[in-house]
Amino acid sequence: MNSLPDDLNVLSLKQKPDFVQTPCVQSLTERALCYLQAGYPVHFSGPAGTGKTTLAMHVAAQLGRPVLLIHGDDEFGSSDLIGGQLGYRSTRVVDNFIHSVMKTEENVSKTWVDHRLTNACKYGFSVIYDEFNRSRPEANNVLLGVLEERLLELPTGRKSESYLQVHPAFRAIFTSNPEEYAGVHKTQDALMDRMITITIGQYDRETEVQITAAKSGLELDESARIVDVVRAFRELAVLPLAPTVRACIMIGKVIALRGGSASCEDPIFLETCRDVLRIDGIKISRDGIPAGDTWLNEVVAEHCPPWSGRFPRQSTNGRLLPTNGQVAIAR
Image 1: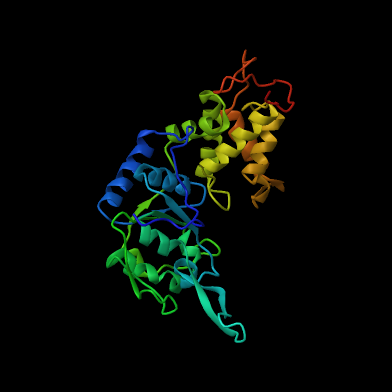
Image 2: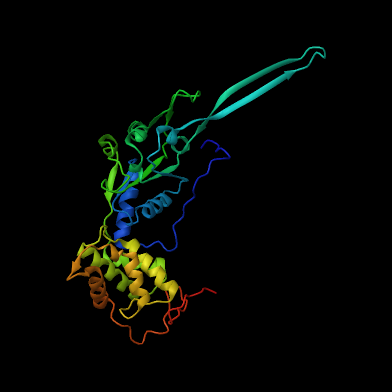
């Protein structure tokens, strides 16, 4: 490998200790790694909150290569991926070899700076292009040659070479949200044809329970109650956006912090569900009464009956949680 520039910042990813490995997640990981090892870029597509970026980072960590992370942006142009002229370099030579004669020579030249895609292609890094369809399609045209011919076409301003042969170890992982989301562009067919797309939908119940428990520190049975409430509202299809496992994690973390419990008797749990699930955004009424309140009470009563003999209880990290509604302080 070529020597790396001192100012090049790369990520060295390792598997997170709280990353959940259920059969569903393992299957997604193994498929993605197989495609990447065969030399194809992988594209994780699906709704926000389904863990696409987390999964992309996990897969990239398995490759064992440094990672460069790019976030899609509507203001991007090709130069934001490849590089461009960044300022000027001025040199001045003063010749005073003969005491009575002074010669001065000045030279001003533009300075070229390689950006992340160019560095990844040059050094064989992995690239995670997160929400790449938030960038305009013309900004991503440079990827066509990189992914197919393994050649990066460089602007004329980069004097050393016009083309860069992509390093054999270079790998690319993309994530995207559905086209109907605000701020998302339709991707050109030629680019999509060069990727292998894995659609990430809602996870199975077991995976969501395991993720909620790992991220919040709650016990599995309490995490299961939270997941069942979120999945019930997902099936009702009355919210503007279907709640994902991210909602489960939010609710779990908040009630763990505040010492609440997943019970229909706990006001902390009820108000947290209301806020996280955006119950007030449901524009349906029953006899002049907001239906969201009724649905919330019914769903929580069904899936989160009163706890009995539950105190004191422990989280999965062994920390005792308070039972009086006060905030739990780690010591």
